[in-house]
Image (tube, rainbow over all chains, first blue to last red; front, top):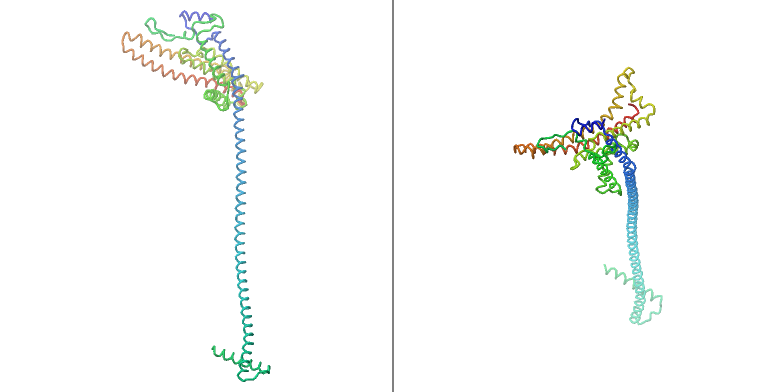
Length: 185
Length: 263
């Protein structure tokens, strides 16, 4: 029947019906469909699936790597911060120590200086006193003997009586001292 | 093709779609011009997707990106969107095949020197519609053995007297009209699209080269029909993509309905 329609159509008597499928049309359509179905099913889609798996694996790998790097960076930062804080504390301690040392050394030096000064002063005083004493003693002896010599010469008599002489000299010196002090005033 | 050898105008006829056989004339394996064009479209699918997926890289090049975009469209926007990841993967080969077979066969309608879509022969739309029909019945019977036809024909929650009306409607709409509309929608879009383009361009030919012998003003009509032919050629690109999408989408929707727990 299809054959007759086709023949009629080619002769221009009656148009072919496009809704009636020709056997060759159905056969070649089915062949094409099956070929393409197997092509996509067995070849293209597995390749595509493999690619998508690889891609997600790569993305996951990269994310993992980024995570590790992030963690390392954070750890390093933490370490540096801790080190910095340590160093700062150390510096503060050293500064404090230095300040305390300076203060201590200063006060020590001051004390030392004071002691030295006092010692020097005391020494000087002692020396002066000793000088004075020795001067006083030698002066007294010398003045005594001079005076006795002088007096001996004056009175022509030896003041051999030591006891008397000494008393005399002493009285004289006392008078002299009195006169000296009153003279000074 | 409609020509104007004898000086008169011949519009396109339905004989456009029944060209003379080239090989195996008279046998069930007859090959004519349109069947050859169908083979070329299928060859294009194989070449593009074979080369495009041969050495796939994680970071795709230009050509691989386009191939991936096409495959992702069928996978993400049609299959996984409607069926979810698991069932989407099961029916993905079928849906991808339907989408690209329809798309590539449609596009030959506007490629110069082919100028006809092999989907304007009923064979391919019919085969694909039957496959879609078998697919959603298979999906339904696998998911709800025994209950699929009962749920489809006697929807739960309907008072039983209404089954007198509902059941015949469901029977016709689900099991008869679905494949018929799938077939006719694609067939008629391609057939009418081709007839329109032939009409415009044969009219252009007639006005510019035959009718101008009578009066030069007919040339203006020729310019007009040429412009319309150009616009409708662009429109056919849209129709080709849209019909491929609609066919694949409806097939997926039918499978989804068959897999749904409640009808």
